[in-house]
Length: 406
Length: 79
Image (tube, rainbow over all chains, first blue to last red; front, side, top):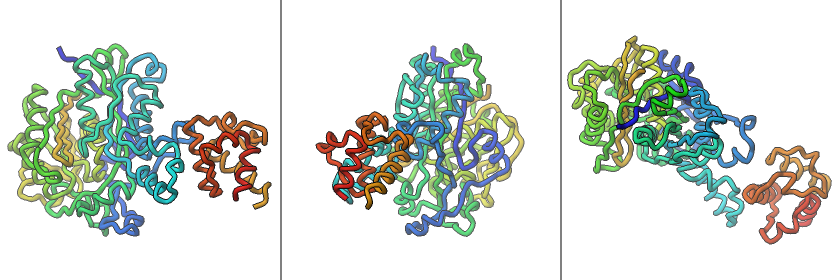
């Protein structure tokens, strides 16, 4: 008998806000977190558009010996995790006495790698890289830092699955709990927000160049989209067995009904339709629900032509002509990449708990595929009890989560 | 650079980096104990001295640089 898995805490550090209330309000009002970054233009970027985020100053909260190993995305993840643990009413005493796990998505750490390489080439002396470089440089930097800071002693694992990293982290965490291997796992996704992290991505012409109107640039499903806008930050959800949550008297947001996944086995950057369709169908089948029970679909849609088109086809393959709202919150946040699968669970949960669906801003004119979906471009009031969240990544990695209100 | 000025500058950068009050930096004080350096953060002190003063402390030379007084002398002699 598999255990039920519930969400008992959430924390986020996002361009839409640093608290759940701020993010809820930003979603509701259709705020965009996208700006023009002059530094990127000076660096020769095609597009200077990005989400805007400040790196938190943790000097008062963490010692130097804790901070020195943290690149920016680990700092975002720390802030999100502090809030999520507090939200779940898990204090350090509890963490010290129980085996709490950690599974977090992260797929790059560019600046520390770049700075260490520059130092080696300039100085020809590896000592001068400093002690933090190796620990900041690895993809597992977020989990190694959070595991040590919070003294976690359960599963400790980083997930590098491109733009589906955060979603797979939650899905895999749920499997550990379903199978009775862990009671509580800190899950999430983190994404660095600096020019160098996305320079080569800019180089393959993937980004929107609508620089004259930054808040209009990210326009998933819109006929006149011209590419994605990079974003980032971190999002943490505390997932827990239902029994553990009840035993602790924890507030339960919702239940993770299922995790669907697939690999396209196809092109490295262009997604197909069959892979995502398979992930969606697997999630629905494993959830044991009918499609009609889904009240909202949070699409992966990043505002690229081929990605949006093929996802619209995959969603239509599954939903058919049912009138179920589909939106991409990336219209407001840009593409939060390694973080997105986790942050979009939080965005969707905030909508579900507050009876609204944030409009897919900038969706002004559909194309032939998005026209077959019900995509509101303004916030609507709606009560729903089940949502589906898609995350897809380079190399054709797909993840779908279905979550029910409790 | 005058040695007194150099000492003040070394104290300032060490105090800022390792977040220890410079008042604790007496010439006879043990650097590792005072700055609470472990084997990792000792690397950061070497990198900091190189970056700020252009003076490299080799691994074999670290044994001579145990106190603040020894560090002041070491850097002053090589600048």
